[in-house]
Length: 323
Image 1 (cartoon, rainbow, N blue to C red):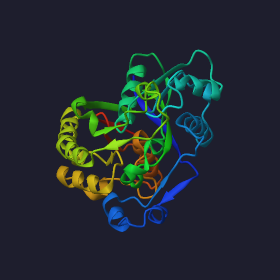
Image 2 (cartoon, one colour):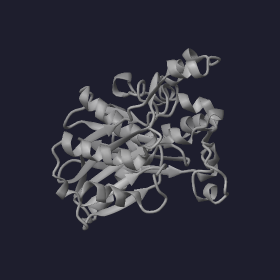
Image 3 (cartoon, one colour):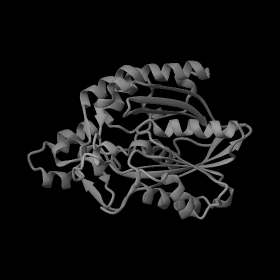
């Protein structure tokens, strides 16, 4: 039994931060030069009392309404976030309650970032292949902007908040396949928020945003690791670049993505970008891009799409999806 992506919806917070807004706050910035590198003009920011779990519930209802889904068929919830509303309890349990799902539904949080969507698809595929579940609600949501301090203002130009919901069902003839993944925890310090967990809470300090990123280290990691990841997945799945109809990478920034596209020799018309008015939404960037690609007719039923996630961890993951 295969696992098939049946439907996707996404949610973006109402509040926005455009480059013009950032320029007013930081007039000394060369914002036009920054925009030319990131490819990002605007990003959405969660409200002060709006957390990832709130966005997850909102996007789940949006998925149900947009695609006319019978929520009684959902038998497992996977919630991927690195910015949970609560450390305890499992936030997926709160989502189950808010959606009014039955008590026979499994619920699990997954702490993973930029590669989190593909990792979560792997979990969903395993649940369906082992006949543990038949209809899985996968939600990704993050509020990274709450971790960014004024001191690290360059991160304001990159990250935006958002959520996505994906319905995954068992299928006989099409689905998610051929996963490749990896981890290098030795370089975890390249993108880290040390005060975001229990160690920060137990220090007794008042909450302080402290997300730190070594952009150069992350860039070199990406260029050194992701081309091999793509080659390994093509070999494992028995495909070539020509066989894949569309490549959807984690929407990190356009400068990095264009370097990757050229290094892997992916034709421009097969490489989808949609971060201009959304920004880097961490684990939600791939499903949001997938939704945009579908609406813009970049893929259709029967298409073969490669999904590639990479970043915080440091971690990476990729898979092939037959739609």
